[in-house]
Structures are given as structure tokens and as C-alpha cells.
Image 1 (cartoon, rainbow, N blue to C red):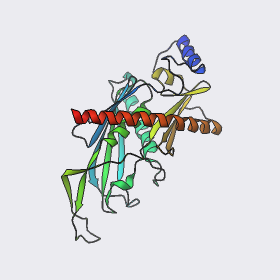
Image 2: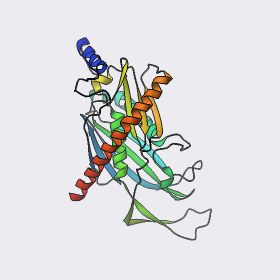
Image 3: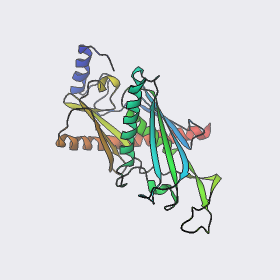
Image 4: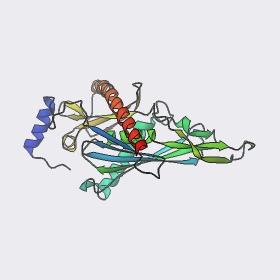
Length: 287
């Protein structure tokens, strides 16, 4: 928890009401974002994202598996988040476990959409090798190194960057297996397919403080929030998922306005993230 005096609380709320936050930003402005890719060599893809003093890492590991009977034409993705106790004293023990579970669930909803796959951000059908028999399972791990608010957006950006950095080995399927048999597969050590991230959304969290809402809230600003709504939006402007936290209810008309703001902000965020990922990958190739 952030310990603030009454004067500091009023200063934060007053600044947001006047569209001038404590660090000089306007309500809908993100802090500078920095991306580094290929930070974990043994993973299929990885990235580190810094958003102000919030610092997170995401890695992607691809393993061959079997599609579920309910979705034989889709691969599987599992997201696990770990909040390091060194990032924040409150992350020690159960506090960190609960937040890790909350973030993992929120990312699953925002990046994978509904169970039916409708509106899903990550294209699970691209992970299929042989329908009903063989697919790629992606294990996405996120680590919070340093926390100064807006963890969900930062982790969403790191996962998007890590997926963009992900190379999946080409798979050759041996001919001749009958319909009942599990086909034999040969995984290439030399040919890799780049994972398509064109449909992977960014997450924009709108945090309500007083009568107004802001993007990319710091820990101090989050300590004064009544509620927060996180909306994942892809580059086509489609909503892929939504999640809310905080006890205060939100009027449906306000939700519609939040979606409109998130749509506008997401375009700038996607543009910035694209250019940061490109620069990071160029640096990785040069080094």
C-alpha cells in the first residue's frame, strides 16, 4: 500500500481534476515506454518492457501438444504471472500470490477473448499442426521486476513484444498415419516461423479517480482509485476483452465513453509499441 498524507491525496485528485497530474502528464498520456527483446535466450521469444518505474519481463515457450476435444482446430495458450517480492514489499507471501493470480486471469481474458474464440486477440488456429492431433502449446510467463502502477498494461505490452520476438520451429508431419493414430512429427532445428502478432491487442486501463479517469496510473494514483476498467483493443479497433477491478460500480454510459477513450489511446499506444519493438529487434540483430 502507498502511504500518503491527506494533503498528498488532495494534491493527486486536484491535479487529475485540472488535467495536470503530479508528474506533469495529462489524463490520457502514457509514461515513456521502452522495449528490449530477446532477453531470455533459452525461450522461443522474450521481451522486457519499462513503463516509467514499472518494469516487467515476458517469455514464451512453445511445446508440441494435443488440441482439446472441444477445440480440435486450435492450439492452446497458458499465461502465468509471478510478482517478485523484490518489486514490492506487499508481494511477499499471499499478497503476491493473489495479485499474480488476478493478473494471470485478467491477461487471459484480455488477450484470449472468450472461450469460443470469438474476438480472441491471439490467433489460436495458427498454432494447429494437425487438426485434432497435434498443436503448439504456448506457455507465456510474466515477471514483475519493479512495480509503480499499471502492471496489466505493461504486462500486455511485454507479452505482445515477446510474441513478436517468438520463432516457432517448422514441423514436418510424416505421411501414412491412419486417422486413429497420433502422427509422427519431425521438428526442424533450422527453419522457424515468425509468430503473427498483427491481431494481438494492447491493453488500455482507465483508472477512475474522483469524477475523472486516467490512463497509465502510477501506484500513488491507483491508491486513490474507486475502480479501474481494462480494455484490450487490436489495431483494427476491435475489442478483444475487458476486465474490471475495484468495488465501485460504473454506469453503462460511462463504460461506453471509456471504450471510446480507450480506442483513441490504443491507436497511439500500438504505434509507439510497434516502433519500440522494431527498434529493439534491430538492436538485437546488431548485437
